[in-house]
Amino acid sequence: MFYTLAGRRYVVSLAAVFGLYVLAGKVGLSLASVHASVSAVWPPTGIALAALLMLGYRGWPAVFAGAFVVNATTAGSLATSSGIAAGNTLEALLGAYLVNRFAGGARVFDRAPDVFKFVGLAALLSTTLSATVGVVVLGLGGSASWADFSPIWFTWWLGDAAGALIVTPLLVLWSRDWWSDSPRGHVLEAAALWLSTILVGLAVFGEGLVHFGIMTLPLTFLCTPPLVWAAVRFRQREAATLVGVLSGIAIWETLGGSGPFVSTSENESLLLLQVFMGTVSLMVLSAAALVDERLRIEHEREALLARAQAARAEAEVPDDAGPRAAQPARGHHQRGERARSHRRLRRGRGPRARRDPPPDHPPRAAGRRPARPRARYQRRHRAGV
Image 1 (cartoon, rainbow, N blue to C red):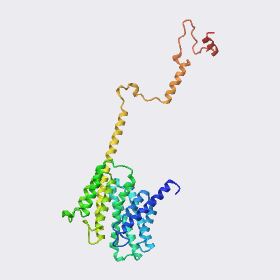
Image 2: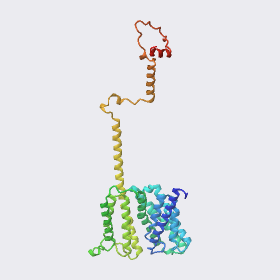
Image 3: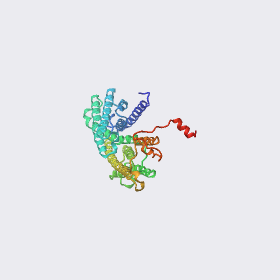
Image 4: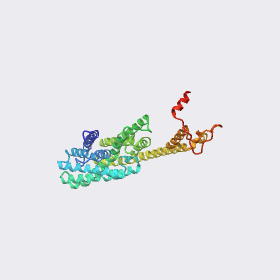
């Protein structure tokens, strides 16, 4: 397998998933507060789900290895790390199976109903498996107290759900359409969209509105117009990218102690922020899917009308084409029969080759063919001998 092109691509893909999972996992665990192995920001869930949707179920070894390496330094023992890695892998496998079975697989973000199925099945349902297995393993291993089961479980589950909602669309859409351009976007418009999204993110979640005395007002709705703009004017890929950019700005500013979601604890602030960003991601992805679906239906209808008009034009016969245009084309057997008739006429066997006898020539007997001279006499006669 490793000596073929497909095998080498498979190994490279597994290595990329493993490296990306470990890097994102270390970043996520650096924000952990309720437990060293639990974080409200957990992008590896989205990475694992996107990997299994794009590579198939055979990508699970990279997910398991990445989860094991990430938790090896925080779980307390190798057995606990293996249990957490198994829960994360089963979560990704279950989410990928549900999406492939009920929501269109890797094309899940092309239709709005499939987007809602993705949220319910992959982001909300399958993530409960990892949270439950992880907390039970931590409790059995002595790394966490059973009294803290509820806050640890909720933080684990919500972090995984937000990671699936924000990271999975970003990776799936870019890996599927990375070579295509945005047919409805322009360079200047895209630059203005990116600039407005960054400025709005800094103004809402940072300290940009402090100088105007309106920092305490609930202005998170200002994040909606740039994202809706991206959903309507560009592809789902650009909309998911801007959601990820806005989420990164919001997390950075919230950890810095600014923004509308700052609460008494860092973990609570991140949980509130993840709920908001998950809701925004659902809204933007569904709107982009609706717009893309409408445009796709219009293109299919135009193509169908063009084919119908072409077929109608071919079926119509022009008036100046003559009677031969309406006749069907002769087949091979008809052309062969006509050729045989011409040969018979040239040989004198056809009725048109018979000539009337001269007046002084006696009539032939009925039913008797005249004797034909030999070929040499014919040649001598033609030569004038």
